[in-house]
Image (cartoon, rainbow, N blue to C red):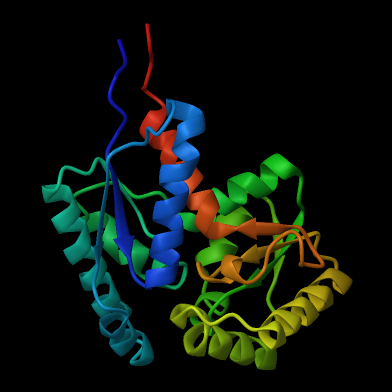
Length: 237
C-alpha cells in the first residue's frame, strides 16, 4: 500500500525559473517514487511585470501581496506546502509567512543545507542586485555558520542586466557566460569555495562544467527539497 505524496504548490515569478523548478520536480521524482511518478504539482504565476512594478518602487509589501495572492489560489487547489523558485522575491517572505495559508520552504535554507552537506565554508552569492544586496542569503547562511561574499557593485549591476535583459527572455550568450566566469573567479580568489546561483535562471547559463567554483543551483536544490518534503511520509508495504 502506497501513501500519497504531498501536493506541491509553486509560486512562480519569472517563467524560466518556474519552468526549470517544475521540470526538476517531475523528472527527479522518478528516482524516489518510481517510473513516471511524481507528486501532484500546481503552479500559479502573476506576470513578471506586476512583480517588477513593485520591485522597482522598492515596495516589498506589494510583492508580498502578489505572493499571498498566489498562495491563496494554490491552497484552494489543494497544495500542502509552497515553494517559490525566485530568489529575489524571498526578500518579501517575512511579510508573507505570518499571513500565508500554507507553510513555505525557503530557497536560501535549501541552499545552505546543501552547502553544509558538501562541506563548503564560504559562499559567493550571485543573483539580481536586489537579491545580492538583501539579507535573504546572509541570514540563512549565518544561521548555519557559513561565511559569504557579495560581488562588487559594478559586477552586481552587470549581472542584474544580464538576468533581466537576457536570461528571463531565454537568451544565453557566450559573452555573458564569460562575464559570470570572471566574477566567480574573483570570488574564488577572495576565498570562496563554492558559488550560489542565486537567480533561478542562472543555472541555465552557468553549471559545474563551466564554473571556476562548484555551484549551488538554487532552483534545483529547492525542487529537491520540495520532493523530500512531499515524499517524507510516503511508504510502501
